[in-house]
Image (cartoon, rainbow, N blue to C red; front, side, top):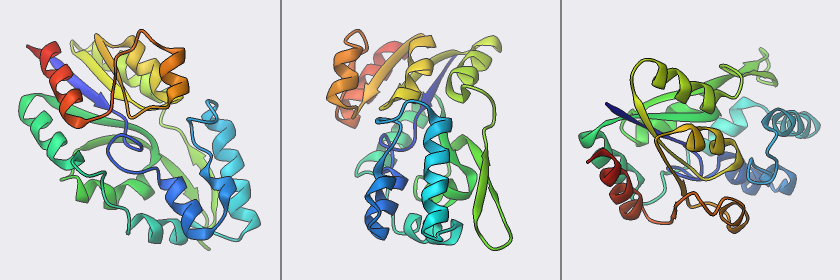
Length: 200
């Protein structure tokens, strides 16, 4: 029994924070887990910038409403879900993910949550569990599943390396060079074929 665990941003949808950085003209917000492996540090950095610029949840949600999945992502996900169970394991937040899940046909997602004040200011964030991607994959394995994982960034490496099979997808040259043992793909067809081979 296999279950495929996919990252969300960079794999199925564009990076939310990069889109928001472009929308607001704040280049500092372009930093992602590709640049800063420490997610806690990255989120604190982002929240400080939002506070400085007086930006809250509403503004980010307005940007997210305009984001569409990466071309081919929904079709890839539909084909994959015909073959096996799929869970999106993301470090994003439930307050961000909703509109994107609708555009992807409501796949299952495990993510985190934001602490939002009444005035819409994002004051903090709550991670579902420590090392959430790795921990989730290990938990699925503990109940009898073989996991197959794919992601693009530093925070995906734990779940990729802990799985029966793992793949980098649309990753950076630096990450691919650092982990040459992990197969890396650029198109959904390649990734689908690789997953299919593991399942068969």
